[in-house]
Image (cartoon, rainbow, N blue to C red; front, side, top):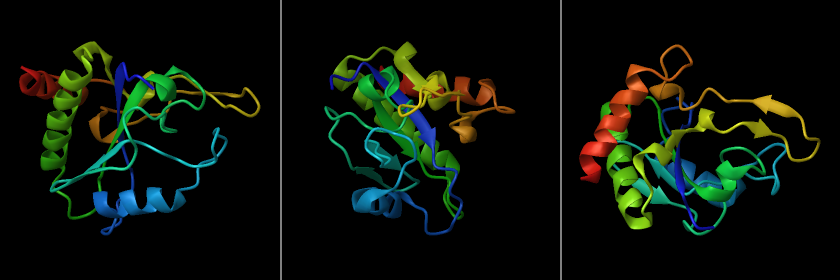
Length: 161
């Protein structure tokens, strides 16, 4: 894969132990996915308030955005942890810094930094249209893009300079 997008996710896993380290370990052990090409969920980076783990090379296609669509085929997936005890503001800031660094590294424009809900999900096995997932819930306002997503993009832009 040659990445041309960066897709931002949030884990929606609020368990105290659901930090970046444990998500990375779970993915490496084989985190089961439903209805996707490989049968497993895979993404490139997991971020929490104190660490970043890379679990997939950025030139390898992940299974994080839209089954067999352009989201998986063209984007780097970043999962933000929302576990209990995690400083969410620090997680968002760390994610913005990582996103800016990846934008520079791969010459990805700011308008190609997208939320998971950007990608229309058509299930691989049966062609069923699953619509748009409301993710990253952490950066949505009432399930929609709004001030939280805009603030995140402003933060990414400030780090990308």
